[in-house]
Image 1 (cartoon, rainbow over the protein chains, first blue to last red):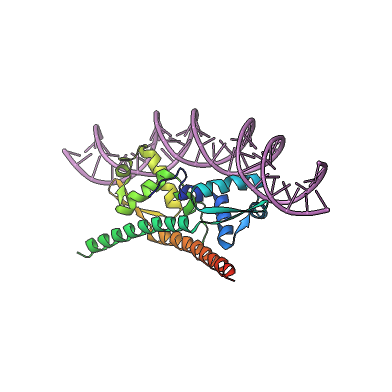
Image 2: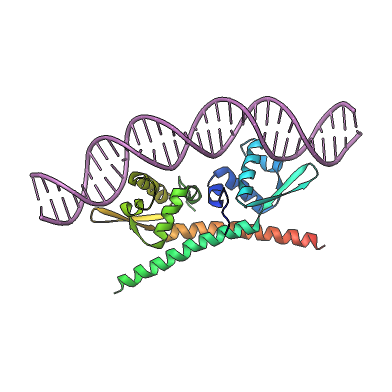
Length: 103
Length: 103
DNA sequence: GTCAACCGTAAGCGGTAACTTACGTTAGTG
DNA sequence: CACTAACGTAAGTTACCGCTTACGGTTGAC
């Protein structure tokens, strides 16, 4: 498993980036389209998109003068797997506690 | 769905808090026990635990002079559900794209 | 009671990150 | 060609946040 400079958790730790990611989860959008509806400037959106891209959470393709961003399914799957790891450990943990209490 | 001052994403956005959460996913631990093995002081751990608690990610119980922390299964489940929401939307999104391309 | 272990919180500081403004680049349009 | 729309990036500022040190409170042991 490769390690990136910016992990998905840190990327989604920011509220603005989460909003952007939610918008992209609905459907692919351009930068300007994302900036509309958000209370931040367009360059700010660009900077957030760079972080999300470094975290492998979004992809971009060029379409004329516009850049269309969409969620990266692989990165989202990786994050989901990591969270499932927590879930599994915690569950196993609770089972042990339950067994101890029933002794 | 109740909104908290500190959401789970923001809480896990910090690297130290993620490490703490991983430790607690393995088994419940006291504050001092968590602080050992982490490169930060014990009060720092306390502050992180407060954030994790506000985000409903951990619970605490008293055991003598020690406070035993453990992951809150409800909070973790909520986070998992939210991530699954992203997953569902993104998946539906990709399906539409695939259908358009096959036309 | 005295002592020690464990913990939470307040205060203060330094670094960083999120934002804006300004600028340069590229692609399409007339 | 000129003009515009869309975007990325650099520079600078500001606010926040993660950390340490210091202190006070509580519990158990002797």
